[in-house]
Length: 319
Image (cartoon, rainbow, N blue to C red):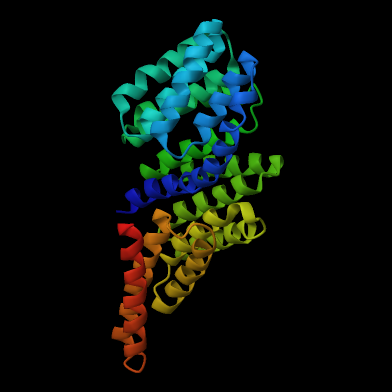
């Protein structure tokens, strides 16, 4: 169960960002009619596909982009759109379709000696294998990506790859290696002054400590992440997730509930119908049920609140 939690956490850290990407995609779509230059239009199709939450719609814009770059005979563009298709299919869980497209992308970028996109393709291949629980090929792909990214000084991509390698070692209980790669990722993001990525790294370290059953350090690293995320409104969903994950570490029902309620305030202000919001509402209901069992004086009030939060979760889940 603990290993599954780590994989689940790595998914959570990317989940909420797509919601804000949707509004970006809507704005970009409005630019299409006035964008006549083929290169600019192709890049616009890519940006739309990258940001669309609806992956079926993303396939539509990816197809338009691929058709355009083929017409242009733009090799790099063909590679990029193969990769976009592969990543969309990977998001949909269709790994058999995804792999040949990502490998086609990799092959084109290798022919063009395009270091940035070669490293990105290897990282995508690693993600593909990681999602299937195939740790050895995933690790090999990530190490290939890192071998290219670090000498090329790809300062944004390198810490992402390092973090992915850390996840694999964590899942295999190789905690010393997991910590080593996680700290390297953190140091690079600190040099980049990338607040959101630093917070993500701190959350990753918290997860490793949780796997090692070092609750005190796990709580500490979650708290450091929360303090960073609290400084920017752009990070609200990630902040809510951090509160939810931290809540899992508390034995005290009241402490757990406090964090879950803090998370829910954020979800209610930003994305009340988000899947993680619905999950949190259900967890709050269970926490109030536990309180009802523990405190007879507060039993009726706790049961009423449990019912309220359960009904909210049920209503949003059915909508």
